[in-house]
Image (cartoon, rainbow, N blue to C red; front, side, top):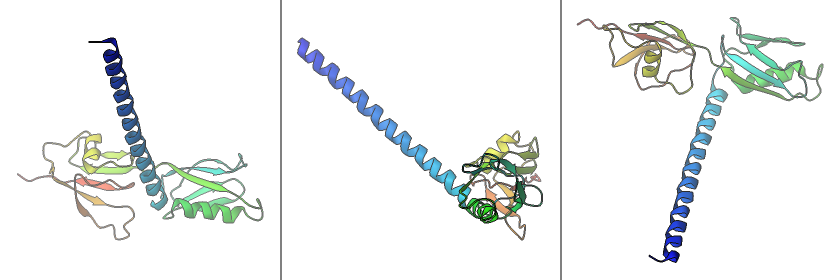
Length: 195
């Protein structure tokens, strides 16, 4: 084989490696972007509640910025303005509430950003090895929740769970499949089988 042929095939192989790497990087980038958009949509539509940890940034005001946990009354307490209601509100609504309390007495044109750092925990009870509360992770399924709780006991029904969503005013217990998504604050119960 001539040296020109060897160079040609080497160059061709190198080009195909770069092409595949570029394709993989583009797909990976698109996937990350979709995950970020999904997380952003969850935090925007998500109704806040007791136990959520928020990062509040008031631009150019370091003394007012920081991390705040929503207390049992559904409020956060900020310097200067005191208690701000957050329970059952979205991130955007809390941002607006802080802005309203800051202007015009404290700041002329306040710019506020609120971000959820940690969602309230979910609770899992019944036929799992370690029933208790666990930190919520975005995108987890009920099967993931059971795994985090140490797995099923030998008496557990494994095809569904009973769930009460914290956002449901009637506190109705729903029967849900194992591949459905956990919501922050869910109370999950794994039933016992009787055979």
